[in-house]
Amino acid sequence: MDNNANVAYGVAFERVCIVQRQKIAYLGGKGPFFYNLQEVRRWLEKNFNKR
Image (cartoon, rainbow, N blue to C red; front, side, top):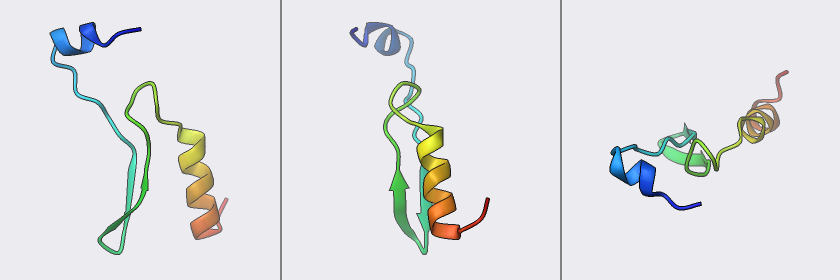
């Protein structure tokens, strides 16, 4: 699958990013196809130990 539709319509990619202590602690893939919210949730649970 190419990216022609995104380019033609000026679509910007979304990324899920977690910033901790002024540094990027987690950077997901370009969305909407290459990021995974379950991965973000696992990262948050691992680093903040809450469920």
